[in-house]
Image 1: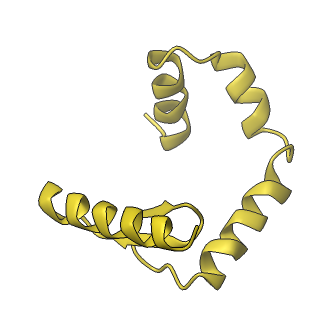
Image 2: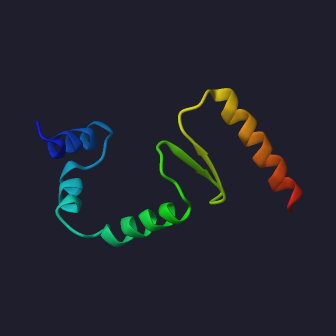
Length: 84
């Protein structure tokens, strides 16, 4: 099975329309939006996955324990409250 076929199989499994997905894959409908997002990510200095972007301002990178995310989200929340 090709990667293309595997992708379409996943599309169908998650309840999306396989024919619509196939049409999108064969078009350039979202090329500009994807390229723009790639540029935004590059400008933010993101080079690893996973990277979680919060409020278009904070980035949590890598697979980390849930405690690390909880701590980071608390710090972000406090910082956001202090800037309002």
